[in-house]
Length: 76
Image (cartoon, rainbow, N blue to C red):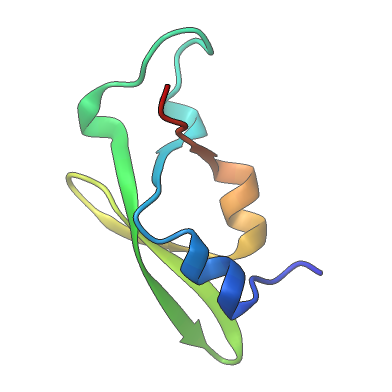
């Protein structure tokens, strides 16, 4: 299925992400200003999207857009 379920989207809240276009090299840590956090869930026309707050913008992503444009950060 290509859409978030409510449960999937809610589990992502407070996770940190970076736009793929802002990653220079896989082994480098991203700039602090390019890290966003998932701060909410939005339902629009029966489609669930996640809301991501970056330092200078707020963006919403469908599941397909999320997979294509974002990388989840994992604490190490």
